[in-house]
Image 1 (tube, rainbow, N blue to C red):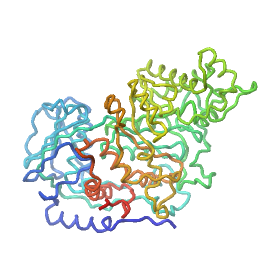
Image 2: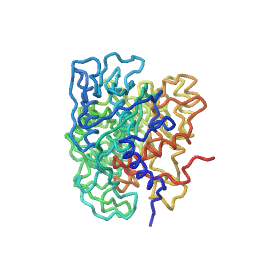
Image 3: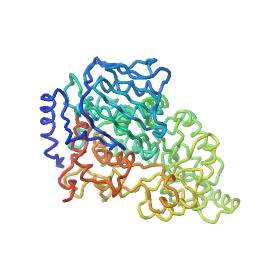
Amino acid sequence: MIARVRSLYRIFIPAIVAGLAALLGGSAFSAAAPPALIPRPVTMKIESGRFTITPATKILYTKGDARLADAADYLAGRLSLAFGKTMTAASTDAVDGPAGTIFMTTAGADPSLGKEGYSLVVRGDGVVIRAPKSAGAFYGGITLLQLALPGAFRAPAMVEGALGGRQTVRPPRPADQPNVSTAAPLKRMVVPCATVWDKPRFAWRGLLIDPARHFWTIDELKQYVDYLAIHKLNILQIHLTDHENWTVEVLRYPNLTPEKALNAADPRREKNQTYYHPARHYYTQDELKSLVAFARKRFVTIVPEFEMPGHCGGLLRGCPECGCTVDAKKVGGGEVCPGQETTYKILQNILDEMLAVFPSQYIHIGADECAKTNWSKCADCRKRMKDEGLESVTELHGYFVGRMSDYLQHKGRTLVGWDEILESGAKPGAIGMYWRSGTADELIRKAADHRQFLVITPTENCYFDYWQSPEKENEPQAFSHFVVTLRQAYALQPLPDHVKRIDPKLVLGVQANLWGEMMKSFPHVLYQTYPRACALCEVAWSPEPDGGRDYAEFFERLRTHLLRLDAAGINYRAPTDADRPRK
């Protein structure tokens, strides 16, 4: 039986911190040990004095800004969970924070902080968070919570049996057991006086989750979003379609979402059996709209991914007319036919419905690992290549991507695809995601020369479905044989040297991906995500110090941050000796 390895500090530190909190009235700070914030802010100065937050503390925000209300309401909600008593936020006409309050405002903010930056000032008589935009105020609230003890993140864990599914097999692995928070409600929350000036390094700070292989309920996705938000991550890419399943209700094409979808989570597939069986394997449009609204209040953007032209088994089962014509017969396989107009019409009809569900500027079409097996045999594809002067099926792939990009641009959106979209040349109107470490390096260099915008998500640092340790006997089954340790996740270099020389702004940000083939339970998803996502969020948010990032220093801060995950009920893999900094 696989045994989950837990570090000693995971067992003893919570009791030590709780004892210090009791002795110090809810605070355990000293000048020698500044608060262990993750991600590390641009600047933070801890000063003498403290401010005490209680359930009676007022949370105020400047009147007239609905998004600022979202930021203040979220902070009030988290404090309510921490105290076990309801707190609410209220608007005010004041331009400066009244004494004894937590005050959020966009008035008088430093414009150089940008769309997501903030300043946070904690004094003995109150807290003021100023930000040019509401997103910055939201992140200032997260930092305020981190300045307190880990119990500030107290929240109940989510038990999958209460989420519309029923448990079919008792979870035999420790990685699948829900991490129930045992944190007691706080009576007060003491934070040190401090001045923080902070803004993110990158605008795209993302994670990917894959319900097409193992299906997760909408409530689980909402929980995942909430966990992103407290790490100042702002993009959740959802891999909604693949060979196994099409997980989105499309009203015009109801056959895409059969009730008995045979995806990886289906109990008929014993090898990949999940530990609970959802009532169905697709999301209604109303459910997805509720997820988008939930994420918006946490300043997280949902980026949907609809795979095309490859990985299309789920699509072709519902819309077989999108297949190629070989020997006068329609064939399926894994790819749609880019030669016939019917394919484009159906895909555009689907996208029209999806654009009404997902307001994101970015729409991901995948476009990776397309075998193109049928294209050279298909009469429609051969005719398309001749008519368009295309010399190879790779160029036909580029033609397909270009048409879908043009369509999305016409709708005011931006196409995103994996780095295979660059094999036929740069796609300046789209965004390429660099994922094939080493293999796609030359593609990235050429694309940068043509001013291609990129998101960096290489396998060697950012594939969180890979093993977390070479000590595989102590880990649940992961994908492939590759290993991405916590150290490797923290070692990600977001700016390839060539891109950095051309223009660093071509890199929009970074993302890590959690593919679903081996994910048998939602706690397992969290176990694979954390604490590697803690490393990712720092790479994405914090400036890189002169001389590079210090893994040992990060690891020390992570010790405290894991206690926040405990309080929040977030399942994670406890670091082992193999993860400790090398002397």
